[in-house]
Image: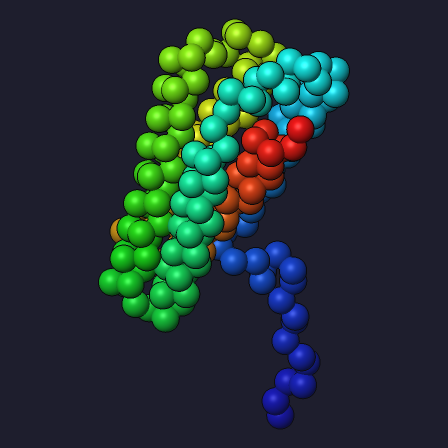
Length: 188
């Protein structure tokens, strides 16, 4: 006689894409970025004139180009994850390479932007605005570089859970930029 006991249902954690530890990392990074953004907003409220002056020195067109790079690269990372689920290793590599190329473009644009700001005399010690600006965007830039490295590593193996984990990290990097962009460049 067959056992009529139903199989246990998968828990919410079992249904997350990728590895659980990647989600722990993602949530801890979101908390860190959240704290930095709250600090930025509090400092803006305390020094509105200094923040307006600092923000006036930024180039929102370069930041918009970076936004296009990251949003597009997020689509590539999602396609890599879908290809991994289908077992298409060649497509995983191609989609991850596309995401990495756009990530490298983001890095190049951001470094070009930093060079222009530093050339105009802005640095981490110029004002509270630039201290927080360079810390926040620099921390994000490091995450973009880490994300590129992660995508290269997971593309190499093309394991479904690994690619999902890499794509999830990359989407976190996208999400954070989509919050940084308006707060730092657009909101006055």
